[in-house]
Image (cartoon, rainbow, N blue to C red; front, top):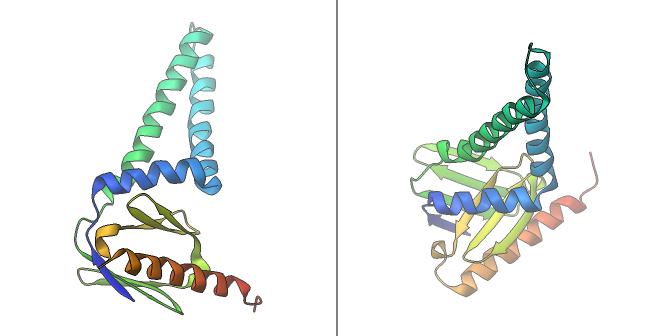
Length: 162
């Protein structure tokens, strides 16, 4: 089954915040990143002569806030507004944008989530495809797409390790 669509930055941002709240791996990586910046900044500021604890906390907090903004903006910088072709098959998902193509096996898919007018296909590396409802010819087409994604994803996780 093949669908074609273009995503919007709003749809990408919606996925980012959804993933941060619902994907433990994403949240863990995010928290580790902000701690890895905040603690050294705090300790560095505390070692500076004449810096009070509240000021060191404030400077550390600003650095954490700055990193949080950068982490949220990164997907927006990597955003590809061009039309994407997404093909699902029993062996995986293939995507093409412009002349670039890539195939992902179902074993790399960790979730298929319907949320509002979007379908999120999440991967082990915390990336995702955000497929808007407008990519499907009908509601039945969307349901068939989601059903096949879940079926093939589940079938790939049932295979014994080689």
